[in-house]
Length: 271
Image (cartoon, rainbow, N blue to C red):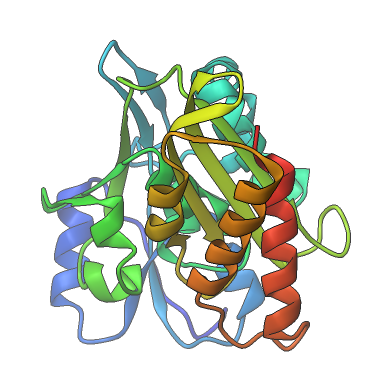
């Protein structure tokens, strides 16, 4: 850290000026976990703490999460267990350990994508929007179409906004890892509405950890719409999901192993 400069802007306008005008490589500093993982990186940083970006607010239309809100704060937020059948709480509790959740920020989790960046998958499920200091709004689909740092350029994520019009839909989230707090091999989430006890009217399916970017399974979702969950249908859908998955290299496990785990988790979290 002795070679790094830490800038302390008083407001977002000043932070953007530093980011735009500096001749050196300057990165926004959120929870600092990436810096801990790569302590020798010769970058300078803009400290975002103190810019009033740590909050959770909701009204009748939207849930708003400040970029500096920690994953721990999200997990402890009382409403997190209420909306979408507790989907956000389930997701946040799969991210790292309690001490790390108190450092990792919502903004950092979705910008500096890592195997534990489960919040990115939840935003795809919930049609979230990512809002920046320069006033640019991205849908989750746009934001995760390629590496977020590439999309942002010299910009800063300030807020996540999630519409509450479908807050009563049923959500589930599950991760598979070697130990409870280990980096996940993969994580999967679904959001759905039941037509009756055995028929899904609509569903969204996402996974994180297959590649660096979260993935949504549109083809399998279409196959599942208004289908009764018989054993044969579940078998066909699982095969479709595994075929649709794009799986990147992982030194821990083979791609086919991930494909099998993906299918197993899918069967486990279906209603």
